[in-house]
Image (cartoon, rainbow, N blue to C red; front, top):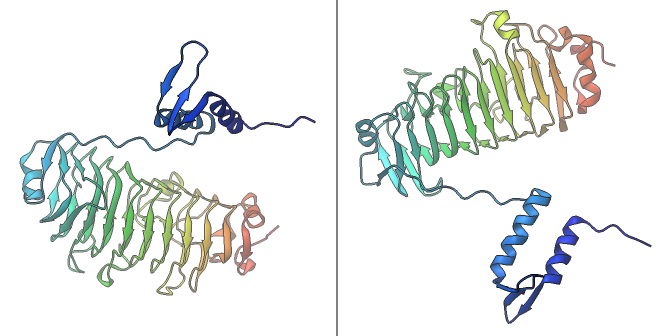
Length: 378
């Protein structure tokens, strides 16, 4: 009887036939010319084969920073101001206690590692890139932005991005308002941690992990224990993408897509959101009403797909609500609710949705809270 041999087994068998381990060394016999190989070389070849065959590839090495080197003893704010636009600042490991660091077009602010390079601010923003384009901020720990109700919303932000800002491998925490706040079009946030941001003075308008009134993408990030919403796209927000994040233990929504009253219905109809593959759990710790893990508020064209919810406190896991604009074309599909519920207010949301959307109920794994709020459910 024949049996199928997996590609991985074939690779292993091939190496077993070729490799002969003698005294800790490996000799690889080839048909043309014998060649002694180190064990490390053979392992490297096997690793490359696994990458090619199975896609199990190690992460690429991080390139060493090349640019203006900065030491913790230097005044970081002055160094940033005294160099031309487009400068790469390579920050050595250590703590930088600084006034607001203002960046320019094309600058890159790169730390040694997020666990080794600490920028501790004392101003209304720690890093200000608000008037820039194409800035990169990476491998840093950022904290300490100050502010209160007299300067909100434009204060208390760990990072204030500009146009086409890239933020990656950054931990922004213990800022009075937001870990990342503001920004123009094209913001991309990858592999960041946003925690313990926000305060009572900023609740309602802006407090939380990250908020912008323009398009942004956040992926692969950990947003937790913030006062306010974890991940929030509001006001204009033409395109919002939140994928593969963990948003947990925030005092209000874990993820929120919203449009403000000043926006026209036509602009809302042209906007969209993708909220997919996130873990959104134990949010609304303040027991805010109505509250939710994921909230769509006065917005349309949102896909809420394959998220894992659970433990939302005194609120729905997913809610669609708001009366400022029509809320149509909301797809809520294949979410794992873990006991959470899906809801929508009678006056504003899913009851007005085209009947083709009502299939979402059958495809959401969990129970629907108060089906009369939704309309006819098939």
